[in-house]
Length: 603
Image (tube, rainbow, N blue to C red; front, side):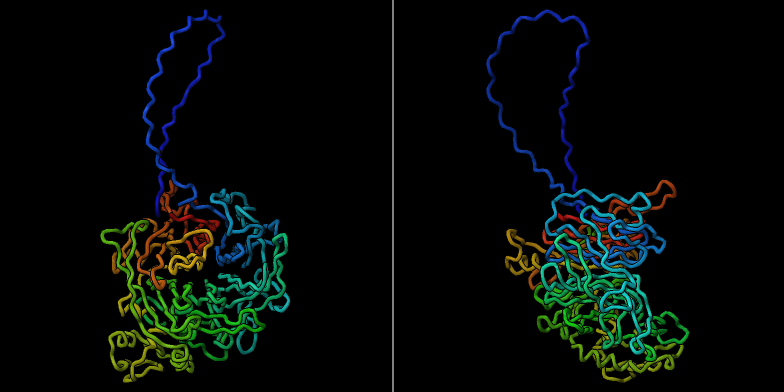
Protein backbone atom coordinates (compact mmCIF):
# COMPACT_ATOMS: atom_id res chain seq x y z
CA UNK A 1 0.00 0.00 0.00
CA UNK A 2 1.35 3.45 -0.89
CA UNK A 3 1.17 5.56 2.22
CA UNK A 4 0.70 9.27 1.76
CA UNK A 5 1.77 11.56 4.59
CA UNK A 6 0.64 15.14 4.58
CA UNK A 7 3.35 17.57 5.68
CA UNK A 8 2.56 19.42 8.87
CA UNK A 9 1.68 23.06 8.23
CA UNK A 10 3.28 25.68 10.45
CA UNK A 11 0.42 27.83 11.63
CA UNK A 12 1.09 31.35 13.01
CA UNK A 13 -1.62 32.04 15.52
CA UNK A 14 -2.32 35.63 16.68
CA UNK A 15 -3.88 35.98 20.08
CA UNK A 16 -5.92 39.17 20.61
CA UNK A 17 -5.99 40.27 24.21
CA UNK A 18 -9.01 42.29 25.28
CA UNK A 19 -8.32 45.09 27.77
CA UNK A 20 -10.01 45.22 31.13
CA UNK A 21 -12.70 47.85 31.66
CA UNK A 22 -10.40 50.65 32.92
CA UNK A 23 -10.00 54.33 32.07
CA UNK A 24 -8.63 55.14 28.67
CA UNK A 25 -5.01 56.25 28.76
CA UNK A 26 -3.74 59.48 27.24
CA UNK A 27 -3.02 59.51 23.55
CA UNK A 28 0.65 59.11 22.70
CA UNK A 29 2.59 61.33 20.34
CA UNK A 30 2.85 60.35 16.73
CA UNK A 31 6.14 58.58 15.98
CA UNK A 32 8.43 59.38 13.09
CA UNK A 33 7.85 57.25 10.01
CA UNK A 34 11.00 55.38 9.03
CA UNK A 35 12.31 54.90 5.50
CA UNK A 36 10.90 52.02 3.52
CA UNK A 37 13.10 48.97 3.47
CA UNK A 38 14.32 47.24 0.30
CA UNK A 39 11.95 44.58 -1.14
CA UNK A 40 12.64 41.11 0.16
CA UNK A 41 13.63 38.19 -2.03
CA UNK A 42 10.66 36.05 -3.18
CA UNK A 43 10.48 32.72 -1.43
CA UNK A 44 10.58 29.49 -3.44
CA UNK A 45 7.31 27.83 -4.38
CA UNK A 46 6.08 25.26 -1.94
CA UNK A 47 5.66 21.61 -2.86
CA UNK A 48 2.25 20.79 -4.29
CA UNK A 49 -0.04 19.09 -1.82
CA UNK A 50 -1.23 15.54 -2.39
CA UNK A 51 -4.59 15.15 -4.07
CA UNK A 52 -6.96 14.24 -1.28
CA UNK A 53 -8.70 11.70 -3.50
CA UNK A 54 -5.55 9.69 -4.28
CA UNK A 55 -4.78 6.76 -2.04
CA UNK A 56 -8.07 7.17 -0.20
CA UNK A 57 -10.57 4.44 0.59
CA UNK A 58 -14.18 5.59 0.46
CA UNK A 59 -16.90 3.43 1.98
CA UNK A 60 -19.53 3.37 -0.77
CA UNK A 61 -21.91 0.89 0.86
CA UNK A 62 -22.28 -1.81 3.48
CA UNK A 63 -24.35 -4.98 3.24
CA UNK A 64 -26.47 -6.67 5.93
CA UNK A 65 -25.20 -8.98 8.64
CA UNK A 66 -23.93 -12.34 7.43
CA UNK A 67 -23.65 -11.23 3.80
CA UNK A 68 -20.82 -10.82 1.31
CA UNK A 69 -20.58 -8.09 -1.33
CA UNK A 70 -20.65 -9.96 -4.64
CA UNK A 71 -21.44 -9.40 -8.30
CA UNK A 72 -19.93 -5.96 -8.86
CA UNK A 73 -20.66 -4.86 -12.42
CA UNK A 74 -20.41 -1.33 -13.81
CA UNK A 75 -22.20 -0.60 -17.09
CA UNK A 76 -21.18 1.88 -19.79
CA UNK A 77 -24.06 4.09 -18.62
CA UNK A 78 -22.68 4.15 -15.06
CA UNK A 79 -25.13 1.75 -13.38
CA UNK A 80 -23.56 -0.30 -10.59
CA UNK A 81 -25.02 -3.74 -9.90
CA UNK A 82 -24.05 -5.76 -6.84
CA UNK A 83 -25.51 -8.55 -4.75
CA UNK A 84 -26.14 -9.42 -1.12
CA UNK A 85 -24.89 -12.99 -0.85
CA UNK A 86 -26.19 -15.32 1.90
CA UNK A 87 -27.32 -12.70 4.45
CA UNK A 88 -28.43 -13.95 7.85
CA UNK A 89 -31.91 -15.46 7.73
CA UNK A 90 -32.47 -13.80 11.12
CA UNK A 91 -32.53 -10.35 9.48
CA UNK A 92 -36.07 -9.03 9.90
CA UNK A 93 -35.77 -5.30 9.25
CA UNK A 94 -37.89 -4.35 6.23
CA UNK A 95 -35.92 -2.04 3.95
CA UNK A 96 -37.72 1.30 3.43
CA UNK A 97 -36.88 1.50 -0.29
CA UNK A 98 -37.69 -2.09 -1.21
CA UNK A 99 -40.29 -3.13 1.33
CA UNK A 100 -38.46 -6.44 1.85
CA UNK A 101 -36.08 -7.82 4.46
CA UNK A 102 -32.55 -8.81 3.45
CA UNK A 103 -32.81 -12.39 4.75
CA UNK A 104 -32.04 -14.30 1.54
CA UNK A 105 -29.84 -14.02 -1.54
CA UNK A 106 -30.45 -10.66 -3.26
CA UNK A 107 -29.59 -9.21 -6.68
CA UNK A 108 -29.74 -5.43 -6.91
CA UNK A 109 -28.50 -2.09 -8.23
CA UNK A 110 -27.59 1.34 -6.84
CA UNK A 111 -30.08 3.56 -8.62
CA UNK A 112 -30.02 7.29 -9.07
CA UNK A 113 -26.24 7.68 -9.47
CA UNK A 114 -23.84 7.55 -12.43
CA UNK A 115 -20.65 5.81 -11.31
CA UNK A 116 -18.90 6.96 -14.48
CA UNK A 117 -19.31 10.57 -13.32
CA UNK A 118 -18.54 10.60 -9.61
CA UNK A 119 -16.76 13.53 -7.92
CA UNK A 120 -13.19 13.07 -6.74
CA UNK A 121 -14.22 13.09 -3.09
CA UNK A 122 -17.27 11.52 -1.53
CA UNK A 123 -18.32 11.35 2.08
CA UNK A 124 -18.15 7.85 3.50
CA UNK A 125 -21.23 5.83 4.21
CA UNK A 126 -21.16 5.31 7.99
CA UNK A 127 -20.20 2.10 9.75
CA UNK A 128 -23.59 0.60 10.66
CA UNK A 129 -24.51 1.37 14.24
CA UNK A 130 -28.20 0.70 14.74
CA UNK A 131 -29.96 -2.62 14.26
CA UNK A 132 -31.74 -1.23 11.21
CA UNK A 133 -28.42 -0.17 9.66
CA UNK A 134 -26.87 -3.57 10.34
CA UNK A 135 -29.73 -5.41 8.62
CA UNK A 136 -30.03 -3.34 5.43
CA UNK A 137 -27.86 -1.94 2.63
CA UNK A 138 -26.40 1.45 3.60
CA UNK A 139 -24.93 3.58 0.81
CA UNK A 140 -23.08 6.88 0.45
CA UNK A 141 -24.70 7.61 -2.90
CA UNK A 142 -27.87 6.43 -4.63
CA UNK A 143 -30.44 3.99 -3.32
CA UNK A 144 -30.09 0.23 -3.39
CA UNK A 145 -32.95 -1.33 -5.35
CA UNK A 146 -33.69 -5.05 -5.06
CA UNK A 147 -34.23 -6.61 -8.48
CA UNK A 148 -34.77 -10.17 -7.31
CA UNK A 149 -34.30 -12.53 -4.39
CA UNK A 150 -34.06 -16.28 -4.04
CA UNK A 151 -37.33 -17.97 -5.10
CA UNK A 152 -38.84 -14.80 -6.61
CA UNK A 153 -41.07 -15.67 -9.58
CA UNK A 154 -41.30 -13.68 -12.79
CA UNK A 155 -42.84 -13.91 -16.22
CA UNK A 156 -41.14 -16.92 -17.79
CA UNK A 157 -39.74 -18.18 -14.47
CA UNK A 158 -42.53 -19.69 -12.35
CA UNK A 159 -40.12 -22.01 -10.50
CA UNK A 160 -38.25 -19.14 -8.84
CA UNK A 161 -34.97 -17.25 -9.10
CA UNK A 162 -31.90 -19.28 -8.13
CA UNK A 163 -33.73 -22.62 -8.19
CA UNK A 164 -31.69 -25.49 -9.71
CA UNK A 165 -33.27 -28.66 -11.11
CA UNK A 166 -32.32 -32.24 -11.99
CA UNK A 167 -31.21 -32.51 -15.64
CA UNK A 168 -33.42 -35.53 -16.40
CA UNK A 169 -36.51 -35.28 -14.20
CA UNK A 170 -36.71 -31.52 -13.70
CA UNK A 171 -37.12 -32.06 -9.95
CA UNK A 172 -36.00 -29.21 -7.70
CA UNK A 173 -32.55 -29.83 -6.22
CA UNK A 174 -31.36 -26.49 -4.77
CA UNK A 175 -32.80 -23.11 -3.81
CA UNK A 176 -29.59 -21.11 -3.99
CA UNK A 177 -29.02 -18.33 -1.45
CA UNK A 178 -25.73 -17.25 -2.97
CA UNK A 179 -25.92 -14.89 -5.98
CA UNK A 180 -22.48 -13.87 -7.20
CA UNK A 181 -21.32 -12.45 -10.54
CA UNK A 182 -23.51 -10.02 -12.48
CA UNK A 183 -23.05 -9.24 -16.16
CA UNK A 184 -25.25 -6.79 -18.06
CA UNK A 185 -25.79 -7.12 -21.82
CA UNK A 186 -27.48 -3.93 -23.12
CA UNK A 187 -30.10 -4.09 -25.86
CA UNK A 188 -31.05 -0.40 -25.79
CA UNK A 189 -30.54 2.68 -23.62
CA UNK A 190 -31.50 1.70 -20.07
CA UNK A 191 -32.56 -1.78 -21.13
CA UNK A 192 -30.96 -5.20 -21.42
CA UNK A 193 -30.32 -8.60 -19.85
CA UNK A 194 -28.76 -9.06 -16.42
CA UNK A 195 -27.01 -12.42 -15.98
CA UNK A 196 -26.35 -13.49 -12.37
CA UNK A 197 -24.37 -16.47 -11.06
CA UNK A 198 -25.77 -18.65 -8.28
CA UNK A 199 -22.83 -20.11 -6.37
CA UNK A 200 -24.26 -23.35 -5.03
CA UNK A 201 -23.63 -27.09 -5.46
CA UNK A 202 -25.07 -27.56 -8.07
CA UNK A 203 -25.25 -23.98 -9.32
CA UNK A 204 -26.70 -21.97 -12.15
CA UNK A 205 -27.05 -18.64 -13.93
CA UNK A 206 -30.20 -16.53 -14.13
CA UNK A 207 -31.11 -14.04 -16.82
CA UNK A 208 -33.45 -11.13 -16.06
CA UNK A 209 -34.65 -8.76 -18.75
CA UNK A 210 -34.67 -5.36 -17.04
CA UNK A 211 -35.57 -1.79 -18.00
CA UNK A 212 -34.89 1.58 -16.33
CA UNK A 213 -37.46 4.38 -16.30
CA UNK A 214 -36.80 8.13 -16.47
CA UNK A 215 -36.49 8.28 -12.67
CA UNK A 216 -33.78 5.60 -12.59
CA UNK A 217 -36.04 2.85 -11.24
CA UNK A 218 -35.60 -0.61 -12.76
CA UNK A 219 -38.30 -3.16 -13.60
CA UNK A 220 -37.92 -6.87 -14.32
CA UNK A 221 -39.85 -7.69 -17.48
CA UNK A 222 -39.12 -11.43 -17.61
CA UNK A 223 -36.62 -13.95 -16.30
CA UNK A 224 -35.21 -17.44 -16.85
CA UNK A 225 -32.58 -19.84 -15.52
CA UNK A 226 -30.04 -20.53 -18.28
CA UNK A 227 -30.13 -24.15 -19.48
CA UNK A 228 -26.85 -26.01 -18.75
CA UNK A 229 -28.24 -29.48 -19.50
CA UNK A 230 -26.19 -29.94 -22.68
CA UNK A 231 -22.94 -29.54 -20.72
CA UNK A 232 -23.99 -31.86 -17.84
CA UNK A 233 -25.07 -28.95 -15.64
CA UNK A 234 -22.89 -26.56 -13.69
CA UNK A 235 -21.78 -25.98 -10.12
CA UNK A 236 -20.31 -23.36 -7.79
CA UNK A 237 -20.72 -20.52 -10.28
CA UNK A 238 -18.60 -17.85 -8.65
CA UNK A 239 -17.50 -14.61 -10.25
CA UNK A 240 -17.17 -13.91 -13.98
CA UNK A 241 -16.91 -11.27 -16.66
CA UNK A 242 -18.39 -10.19 -19.96
CA UNK A 243 -16.19 -10.79 -23.00
CA UNK A 244 -15.33 -7.87 -25.33
CA UNK A 245 -17.77 -9.37 -27.84
CA UNK A 246 -20.65 -9.32 -25.36
CA UNK A 247 -20.97 -12.84 -23.92
CA UNK A 248 -21.07 -13.64 -20.18
CA UNK A 249 -18.27 -15.88 -18.85
CA UNK A 250 -19.23 -17.78 -15.71
CA UNK A 251 -16.65 -19.46 -13.45
CA UNK A 252 -17.05 -22.90 -11.82
CA UNK A 253 -15.13 -22.72 -8.56
CA UNK A 254 -14.97 -25.14 -5.63
CA UNK A 255 -16.33 -28.25 -7.34
CA UNK A 256 -12.84 -29.45 -8.40
CA UNK A 257 -12.00 -31.08 -5.04
CA UNK A 258 -8.25 -31.34 -5.43
CA UNK A 259 -5.50 -30.11 -3.14
CA UNK A 260 -1.94 -28.85 -3.39
CA UNK A 261 -0.50 -32.36 -3.12
CA UNK A 262 -3.08 -34.40 -5.03
CA UNK A 263 -5.13 -34.69 -8.17
CA UNK A 264 -8.94 -35.13 -8.16
CA UNK A 265 -10.08 -36.59 -4.84
CA UNK A 266 -10.04 -40.38 -5.06
CA UNK A 267 -13.19 -40.51 -2.92
CA UNK A 268 -15.29 -38.75 -5.60
CA UNK A 269 -17.05 -42.04 -6.49
CA UNK A 270 -16.86 -43.59 -3.00
CA UNK A 271 -20.44 -44.67 -2.21
CA UNK A 272 -19.87 -43.67 1.43
CA UNK A 273 -18.81 -40.12 0.53
CA UNK A 274 -21.69 -37.65 0.94
CA UNK A 275 -19.81 -34.53 -0.21
CA UNK A 276 -20.87 -35.09 -3.83
CA UNK A 277 -24.55 -35.62 -3.02
CA UNK A 278 -25.60 -32.27 -4.48
CA UNK A 279 -24.02 -32.78 -7.87
CA UNK A 280 -25.25 -36.41 -7.93
CA UNK A 281 -28.79 -35.13 -7.35
CA UNK A 282 -28.43 -32.91 -10.41
CA UNK A 283 -27.21 -35.67 -12.76
CA UNK A 284 -29.18 -38.67 -11.39
CA UNK A 285 -29.68 -41.38 -12.48
CA UNK A 286 -26.25 -40.92 -14.13
CA UNK A 287 -23.21 -40.59 -11.88
CA UNK A 288 -21.36 -37.28 -12.38
CA UNK A 289 -18.01 -37.22 -14.16
CA UNK A 290 -15.76 -34.85 -12.15
CA UNK A 291 -13.87 -33.83 -15.27
CA UNK A 292 -16.98 -32.16 -16.67
CA UNK A 293 -16.82 -29.44 -14.01
CA UNK A 294 -14.33 -26.77 -12.99
CA UNK A 295 -14.17 -24.61 -16.12
CA UNK A 296 -15.05 -21.24 -17.64
CA UNK A 297 -18.41 -21.46 -19.42
CA UNK A 298 -19.34 -18.94 -22.10
CA UNK A 299 -23.02 -18.07 -22.57
CA UNK A 300 -23.30 -17.48 -26.30
CA UNK A 301 -26.34 -15.97 -28.03
CA UNK A 302 -27.09 -14.22 -24.71
CA UNK A 303 -30.05 -12.14 -25.92
CA UNK A 304 -31.83 -14.91 -27.82
CA UNK A 305 -34.75 -16.95 -26.49
CA UNK A 306 -32.45 -19.89 -25.67
CA UNK A 307 -28.85 -18.92 -24.91
CA UNK A 308 -26.25 -21.59 -25.73
CA UNK A 309 -23.62 -22.61 -23.13
CA UNK A 310 -20.09 -23.64 -24.16
CA UNK A 311 -17.60 -24.86 -21.55
CA UNK A 312 -14.06 -23.89 -22.48
CA UNK A 313 -11.97 -26.83 -21.32
CA UNK A 314 -9.04 -25.09 -22.99
CA UNK A 315 -8.73 -22.54 -20.15
CA UNK A 316 -8.05 -25.38 -17.72
CA UNK A 317 -9.74 -27.17 -14.85
CA UNK A 318 -9.27 -25.71 -11.38
CA UNK A 319 -11.15 -23.62 -8.83
CA UNK A 320 -12.01 -20.72 -11.13
CA UNK A 321 -12.80 -17.44 -9.43
CA UNK A 322 -12.70 -15.17 -12.44
CA UNK A 323 -11.46 -14.91 -16.03
CA UNK A 324 -11.06 -11.68 -17.96
CA UNK A 325 -10.46 -11.37 -21.71
CA UNK A 326 -8.04 -8.70 -22.91
CA UNK A 327 -8.94 -6.24 -25.70
CA UNK A 328 -7.00 -8.35 -28.23
CA UNK A 329 -9.91 -10.80 -27.80
CA UNK A 330 -7.45 -13.69 -27.50
CA UNK A 331 -5.60 -13.36 -24.19
CA UNK A 332 -7.42 -14.52 -21.04
CA UNK A 333 -6.16 -14.25 -17.45
CA UNK A 334 -7.73 -16.54 -14.83
CA UNK A 335 -7.44 -16.75 -11.04
CA UNK A 336 -7.54 -19.92 -8.95
CA UNK A 337 -9.33 -19.37 -5.65
CA UNK A 338 -7.66 -21.95 -3.45
CA UNK A 339 -4.70 -22.53 -1.16
CA UNK A 340 -1.68 -23.14 -3.36
CA UNK A 341 -3.33 -21.69 -6.46
CA UNK A 342 -1.91 -20.57 -9.81
CA UNK A 343 -2.38 -17.46 -11.94
CA UNK A 344 -3.16 -18.80 -15.43
CA UNK A 345 -3.02 -17.27 -18.90
CA UNK A 346 -4.68 -18.63 -22.03
CA UNK A 347 -4.02 -17.36 -25.54
CA UNK A 348 -6.62 -18.37 -28.11
CA UNK A 349 -5.63 -19.31 -31.64
CA UNK A 350 -8.21 -16.92 -33.07
CA UNK A 351 -9.90 -13.75 -31.76
CA UNK A 352 -13.36 -14.17 -30.17
CA UNK A 353 -12.94 -17.96 -30.21
CA UNK A 354 -11.81 -19.55 -26.94
CA UNK A 355 -12.28 -23.10 -28.22
CA UNK A 356 -8.59 -23.68 -29.04
CA UNK A 357 -5.28 -22.24 -27.88
CA UNK A 358 -2.41 -22.55 -25.43
CA UNK A 359 -2.52 -22.61 -21.62
CA UNK A 360 0.22 -21.05 -19.44
CA UNK A 361 1.01 -20.79 -15.74
CA UNK A 362 2.73 -17.80 -14.09
CA UNK A 363 6.19 -18.19 -12.57
CA UNK A 364 6.86 -15.52 -9.92
CA UNK A 365 10.21 -14.17 -8.70
CA UNK A 366 9.86 -12.21 -5.46
CA UNK A 367 11.77 -8.97 -4.86
CA UNK A 368 15.07 -9.84 -3.19
CA UNK A 369 15.22 -9.18 0.54
CA UNK A 370 11.58 -8.03 0.76
CA UNK A 371 8.73 -9.74 2.61
CA UNK A 372 6.41 -6.88 3.65
CA UNK A 373 3.08 -7.47 1.83
CA UNK A 374 2.41 -3.76 1.23
CA UNK A 375 5.71 -3.21 -0.65
CA UNK A 376 6.82 -6.57 -2.05
CA UNK A 377 6.35 -7.21 -5.75
CA UNK A 378 7.08 -10.04 -8.15
CA UNK A 379 8.55 -10.37 -11.61
CA UNK A 380 6.48 -12.66 -13.82
CA UNK A 381 7.43 -15.13 -16.55
CA UNK A 382 5.13 -17.61 -18.24
CA UNK A 383 5.44 -21.39 -18.44
CA UNK A 384 3.73 -22.96 -21.46
CA UNK A 385 1.73 -26.05 -20.47
CA UNK A 386 0.02 -27.35 -23.62
CA UNK A 387 -2.14 -26.49 -26.62
CA UNK A 388 -5.45 -28.16 -27.42
CA UNK A 389 -9.05 -27.62 -28.51
CA UNK A 390 -12.33 -28.08 -26.68
CA UNK A 391 -13.14 -31.01 -28.97
CA UNK A 392 -9.89 -32.83 -28.17
CA UNK A 393 -10.24 -32.27 -24.43
CA UNK A 394 -13.91 -33.27 -24.45
CA UNK A 395 -12.90 -36.61 -26.00
CA UNK A 396 -10.53 -37.21 -23.07
CA UNK A 397 -13.23 -36.18 -20.59
CA UNK A 398 -15.79 -38.53 -22.13
CA UNK A 399 -13.56 -41.52 -21.31
CA UNK A 400 -14.52 -41.03 -17.65
CA UNK A 401 -18.28 -40.81 -18.22
CA UNK A 402 -19.07 -44.43 -17.43
CA UNK A 403 -17.32 -44.51 -14.06
CA UNK A 404 -19.60 -44.71 -11.00
CA UNK A 405 -19.60 -45.94 -7.42
CA UNK A 406 -19.32 -49.58 -8.54
CA UNK A 407 -15.82 -48.81 -9.83
CA UNK A 408 -14.56 -47.51 -6.50
CA UNK A 409 -11.66 -49.45 -4.96
CA UNK A 410 -10.41 -48.31 -1.56
CA UNK A 411 -6.82 -47.12 -1.71
CA UNK A 412 -6.97 -46.61 -5.47
CA UNK A 413 -8.52 -44.02 -7.75
CA UNK A 414 -10.73 -44.07 -10.80
CA UNK A 415 -9.23 -40.81 -12.02
CA UNK A 416 -5.82 -39.37 -12.89
CA UNK A 417 -3.04 -39.90 -10.35
CA UNK A 418 -0.08 -37.77 -9.37
CA UNK A 419 2.08 -40.40 -11.07
CA UNK A 420 0.20 -39.76 -14.30
CA UNK A 421 0.81 -36.02 -14.12
CA UNK A 422 4.43 -36.47 -13.09
CA UNK A 423 5.03 -38.74 -16.08
CA UNK A 424 3.49 -36.13 -18.38
CA UNK A 425 5.58 -33.33 -16.87
CA UNK A 426 8.74 -35.42 -17.27
CA UNK A 427 8.04 -35.97 -20.96
CA UNK A 428 7.46 -39.73 -20.72
CA UNK A 429 6.11 -41.43 -23.82
CA UNK A 430 3.56 -43.57 -21.98
CA UNK A 431 1.54 -43.55 -18.77
CA UNK A 432 3.16 -45.39 -15.83
CA UNK A 433 2.21 -48.87 -14.65
CA UNK A 434 0.21 -47.66 -11.66
CA UNK A 435 -2.92 -49.58 -10.77
CA UNK A 436 -6.00 -47.36 -11.05
CA UNK A 437 -9.42 -48.61 -10.00
CA UNK A 438 -11.42 -48.43 -13.20
CA UNK A 439 -9.52 -45.45 -14.59
CA UNK A 440 -9.68 -44.50 -18.26
CA UNK A 441 -5.89 -44.13 -18.23
CA UNK A 442 -4.08 -47.48 -18.35
CA UNK A 443 -0.45 -48.48 -17.94
CA UNK A 444 1.51 -48.25 -21.17
CA UNK A 445 -1.07 -46.01 -22.84
CA UNK A 446 0.49 -43.38 -25.14
CA UNK A 447 0.96 -40.09 -23.33
CA UNK A 448 -1.29 -37.14 -24.24
CA UNK A 449 -1.79 -33.63 -22.81
CA UNK A 450 -4.91 -34.31 -20.76
CA UNK A 451 -2.99 -33.59 -17.54
CA UNK A 452 -2.58 -29.92 -18.52
CA UNK A 453 -6.32 -29.40 -18.92
CA UNK A 454 -7.90 -31.88 -16.46
CA UNK A 455 -5.41 -31.48 -13.57
CA UNK A 456 -4.17 -27.99 -14.39
CA UNK A 457 -2.83 -26.97 -10.97
CA UNK A 458 -0.57 -30.02 -10.68
CA UNK A 459 0.48 -29.74 -14.31
CA UNK A 460 1.46 -26.09 -13.85
CA UNK A 461 3.28 -26.72 -10.56
CA UNK A 462 5.31 -29.64 -11.93
CA UNK A 463 6.28 -27.60 -14.98
CA UNK A 464 7.68 -24.85 -12.75
CA UNK A 465 4.82 -22.37 -12.38
CA UNK A 466 4.14 -20.84 -8.95
CA UNK A 467 1.37 -22.71 -7.14
CA UNK A 468 1.34 -20.69 -3.91
CA UNK A 469 -1.41 -18.08 -4.19
CA UNK A 470 -3.96 -18.14 -1.41
CA UNK A 471 -7.54 -17.16 -2.31
CA UNK A 472 -6.66 -15.30 -5.49
CA UNK A 473 -9.97 -13.61 -6.25
CA UNK A 474 -11.45 -11.19 -8.80
CA UNK A 475 -9.52 -9.87 -11.82
CA UNK A 476 -10.45 -6.70 -13.68
CA UNK A 477 -9.31 -4.21 -16.31
CA UNK A 478 -11.03 -1.26 -17.93
CA UNK A 479 -11.16 -2.19 -21.61
CA UNK A 480 -11.03 1.41 -22.89
CA UNK A 481 -8.06 2.42 -20.75
CA UNK A 482 -6.25 -0.78 -21.70
CA UNK A 483 -6.71 -0.20 -25.44
CA UNK A 484 -5.30 3.32 -25.27
CA UNK A 485 -2.38 2.39 -23.02
CA UNK A 486 -1.30 -0.71 -24.94
CA UNK A 487 -2.35 0.04 -28.50
CA UNK A 488 -2.28 3.86 -28.50
CA UNK A 489 -5.91 4.04 -29.58
CA UNK A 490 -7.79 7.03 -28.16
CA UNK A 491 -10.54 5.08 -26.43
CA UNK A 492 -10.77 7.41 -23.43
CA UNK A 493 -11.96 10.74 -24.78
CA UNK A 494 -10.17 13.78 -23.42
CA UNK A 495 -7.65 11.86 -21.33
CA UNK A 496 -4.24 10.51 -22.26
CA UNK A 497 -3.76 7.06 -20.77
CA UNK A 498 -0.19 5.80 -20.80
CA UNK A 499 -0.56 2.95 -18.31
CA UNK A 500 -3.30 0.45 -17.61
CA UNK A 501 -3.39 -2.37 -15.12
CA UNK A 502 -4.94 -5.72 -14.43
CA UNK A 503 -6.13 -5.56 -10.80
CA UNK A 504 -6.30 -8.67 -8.63
CA UNK A 505 -8.06 -9.13 -5.29
CA UNK A 506 -6.60 -11.53 -2.75
CA UNK A 507 -8.73 -12.36 0.28
CA UNK A 508 -5.98 -13.13 2.77
CA UNK A 509 -2.19 -13.33 3.00
CA UNK A 510 -1.95 -16.72 4.68
CA UNK A 511 -0.79 -20.35 4.49
CA UNK A 512 1.22 -20.92 1.29
CA UNK A 513 2.01 -17.19 1.08
CA UNK A 514 3.67 -17.02 4.52
CA UNK A 515 5.15 -20.52 4.98
CA UNK A 516 8.74 -19.41 4.18
CA UNK A 517 8.87 -21.88 1.31
CA UNK A 518 8.82 -21.64 -2.47
CA UNK A 519 8.50 -18.59 -4.70
CA UNK A 520 6.33 -16.47 -2.38
CA UNK A 521 7.53 -15.80 1.16
CA UNK A 522 5.64 -12.90 2.73
CA UNK A 523 5.32 -11.81 6.34
CA UNK A 524 2.11 -12.56 8.21
CA UNK A 525 1.43 -8.93 9.18
CA UNK A 526 -1.97 -8.69 7.47
CA UNK A 527 -2.59 -12.37 6.87
CA UNK A 528 -6.34 -12.34 7.58
CA UNK A 529 -7.11 -9.02 5.88
CA UNK A 530 -5.82 -9.46 2.33
CA UNK A 531 -5.35 -6.77 -0.27
CA UNK A 532 -5.25 -5.80 -3.93
CA UNK A 533 -2.41 -6.28 -6.43
CA UNK A 534 -1.99 -4.89 -9.92
CA UNK A 535 0.02 -5.82 -13.02
CA UNK A 536 0.85 -3.33 -15.76
CA UNK A 537 -0.39 -4.38 -19.18
CA UNK A 538 2.61 -4.62 -21.51
CA UNK A 539 2.86 -5.09 -25.27
CA UNK A 540 0.44 -7.77 -26.52
CA UNK A 541 -1.32 -7.51 -23.13
CA UNK A 542 1.43 -9.47 -21.42
CA UNK A 543 2.04 -9.26 -17.67
CA UNK A 544 5.65 -9.01 -16.51
CA UNK A 545 5.33 -7.54 -13.02
CA UNK A 546 2.86 -7.78 -10.11
CA UNK A 547 2.90 -5.20 -7.31
CA UNK A 548 0.75 -4.44 -4.25
CA UNK A 549 -1.69 -1.54 -4.40
CA UNK A 550 -3.37 -1.57 -1.00
CA UNK A 551 -3.41 -4.00 1.92
CA UNK A 552 -5.82 -4.33 4.80
CA UNK A 553 -4.84 -2.94 8.19
CA UNK A 554 -4.92 -4.55 11.61
CA UNK A 555 -5.25 -3.48 15.22
CA UNK A 556 -4.75 -5.39 18.45
CA UNK A 557 -7.76 -5.59 20.73
CA UNK A 558 -7.36 -4.23 24.24
CA UNK A 559 -9.93 -6.76 25.43
CA UNK A 560 -8.32 -10.06 24.44
CA UNK A 561 -5.09 -9.07 22.67
CA UNK A 562 -6.27 -10.58 19.40
CA UNK A 563 -5.24 -9.00 16.10
CA UNK A 564 -8.21 -8.02 13.96
CA UNK A 565 -8.83 -6.29 10.65
CA UNK A 566 -9.62 -2.59 10.96
CA UNK A 567 -13.23 -1.83 9.99
CA UNK A 568 -11.97 1.32 8.25
CA UNK A 569 -9.61 -0.59 6.00
CA UNK A 570 -9.88 -3.59 3.67
CA UNK A 571 -11.01 -6.91 5.07
CA UNK A 572 -10.74 -9.86 2.67
CA UNK A 573 -11.39 -8.21 -0.70
CA UNK A 574 -13.09 -10.35 -3.33
CA UNK A 575 -14.51 -8.65 -6.45
CA UNK A 576 -12.61 -5.75 -8.03
CA UNK A 577 -13.86 -3.49 -10.83
CA UNK A 578 -11.81 -0.83 -12.65
CA UNK A 579 -13.78 2.36 -13.32
CA UNK A 580 -13.35 4.54 -16.41
CA UNK A 581 -11.37 7.15 -14.45
CA UNK A 582 -8.94 4.57 -13.07
CA UNK A 583 -10.41 4.25 -9.59
CA UNK A 584 -11.34 0.77 -8.46
CA UNK A 585 -14.35 -0.68 -6.66
CA UNK A 586 -13.67 -3.46 -4.16
CA UNK A 587 -16.21 -5.81 -2.59
CA UNK A 588 -15.46 -7.63 0.68
CA UNK A 589 -16.28 -11.21 1.60
CA UNK A 590 -14.63 -11.02 5.02
CA UNK A 591 -15.69 -11.56 8.58
CA UNK A 592 -16.65 -8.02 9.49
CA UNK A 593 -20.12 -7.69 10.98
CA UNK A 594 -21.10 -5.74 7.85
CA UNK A 595 -18.94 -6.21 4.78
CA UNK A 596 -18.14 -3.14 2.72
CA UNK A 597 -18.13 -1.99 -0.89
CA UNK A 598 -15.12 0.30 -1.17
CA UNK A 599 -13.85 2.76 -3.78
CA UNK A 600 -10.09 3.33 -3.96
CA UNK A 601 -8.07 5.84 -6.00
CA UNK A 602 -4.63 4.35 -6.74
CA UNK A 603 -1.58 6.53 -7.19
